[in-house]
Structure formats: structure tokens, C-alpha cells
Image (cartoon, rainbow, N blue to C red; front, side, top):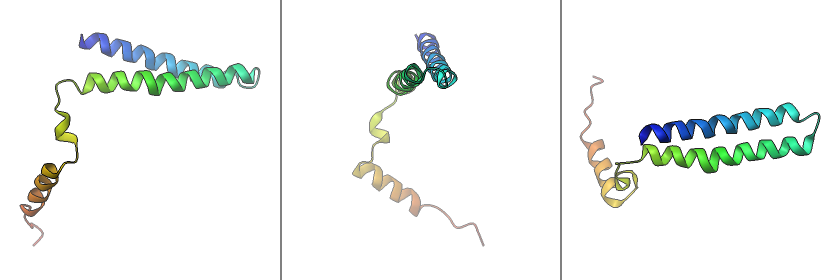
Length: 88
């Protein structure tokens, strides 16, 4: 399952980058079509490839650990107080 997400994300990433590069190559000749390729590549990169990557990487992780809650702020404050001064 993990390999499937890897290949799917990589394929969409390469297709998006290919569309963007192709759009920049077309720009002098056919500007309207070039803008469509660049826009499609950018949209698919940010609205398809990035969420697939984030879903794959966040599996099995507790999102509460990454949220800024009162408990996590207190934990960070306690860690700062326990640091030692080794620059003597």
C-alpha cells in the first residue's frame, strides 16, 4: 500500500512538473495554451500531489502532538527550564 502511494505521488509530481515545463516551452508560440498547461500543472501539484504526500506521511501519527494546545505549551516551558548552562 505504501509503495502504491509513493508511485502515485511521484507520477502526479512528474506529470505536474512536465506540464509546467511544457507550458513554459509553449509560451512564445501559443500563450493561451501555455497558461493552461502551467495552471493545470500548478493546481495538480498543490491540490493533488501535496495532499497525497501528506496523507502518506501522516499515517500512524497523532495529530494532537503537533497542535499548539495548553498542555503542549506547558511541556515546552518545562523543557526550557530544564536546560543547563554549559558555557562557563
